[in-house]
Image 1 (cartoon, rainbow, N blue to C red):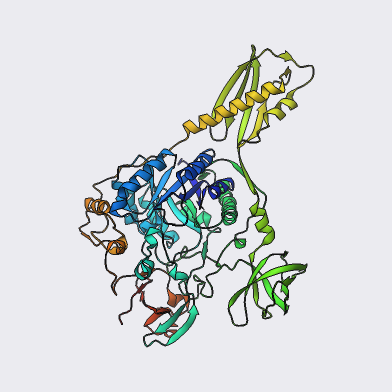
Image 2: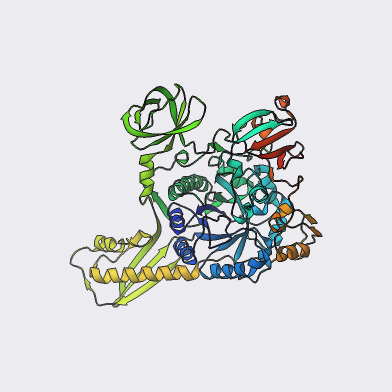
Length: 613
């Protein structure tokens, strides 16, 4: 019978505090940036902070992955090499990598994960990345269940897929618009987020068809109800996006997915097993809609070509919609009544579309009950307008405090024979230790079992909770002696786990395995001599370097390459019955910038380029 698959919940962390909170709320692994080359310029951490996160996570068998997933320039290679050695030394479990030149550095034997920036969309690419020695493969967000299953068939490597959070409209690693228009490379952690801007959709003559809409701004991914299907397709690592999100977001979303994954694992223990240890107890009820979201989508999980009208984008606003409360029944000045069963509180933040159809916000000054509130400012909100809560004061107050504990179950056996008092501890991680102290003890005048168990259960300040306990209740043991024995044995248990925990190592590269293509474009992101050499070692002949290192931006350069299609979003697919709703030649305009929209109906993909005119 096949061994169970370890299922990993992978959480984001901007800093060590959030990493620790993610572990406490149920993450099996956390990904975070180091001091540089981490694809989020605003989410860097010192080595000491990364070490602190590692030390905390490892107690629970959880892991820390460091993001070294930007393009690397030739004059930075040695600096990155030193960084990797430092990360290995402080206990980082794996690196998430985009630039394949890193594989040609003099590296320690640390495990490598292929970043989503590596643009993994096909079985052929998966086999190539496996041959390069990657230990985990992060797939493109756009893949369907069938496409994931096809990749699963050709590789034995763990497959990682995004399950929640913000969506890039372009295939990751293939978005050049920020670099081309602003000189800020998304592949270097400096994305200008041009996809979140409002655009006009215009025809070939410049006539405006749609005005001021966020036509490239996607909703947020939420696949909490598709976890079992994703596991069946071959996903074993479920990744939450959000290394720039605050601690409340991470706590809430991680806790929600921990519960959802555990339900599937508990139903099929012969197939699946958690990738770390520890029982999580919460002080709140997780709710995804209470954290930042632009509305939710499964994205392309179910089909490659979503039906016309499928709402993948949030074209009216790139801001958080939050939690839907109900519709307005009355608005008079600053008095607002909503048809809702939700309990509102002073300080809640609300959002709505006003009479001009502009997404607006309001703050609750005082909640009067039964859906009626006094707003801080007067508002003109139409009757029947949908009201969303973007800030739940009571919920956020809970998350601002310690909101979870995570503990390891430990069983205890206390024995006394021949002047030797011995405590044996074994925990759910598979560790077992025995510690003995010599002491002359006397028979007890009355039963001591309850008192001894109570003393052994005093595990505050540790990560442990007492499970089963066997004690010699007929022997009198001074409380001070038992406390000392407990502390020393727990310390021994900690040290035993630290030196025996399993560590992934870098896999060997198969240098004879051919790259699935023999020519590389700027979008393949070759930015240094070592990346070029690696590709040539694997049979690539023609290599055009990345835009970041000098490839020119032409009218043929794809600035965005996406499965999302504006025509489909607006119900005018060229293969559908409503194709004539929009002319064939379409352009996006924001300020003085004009972008040409090209729909590849055979592949059901869209590209944006500079216009011909």
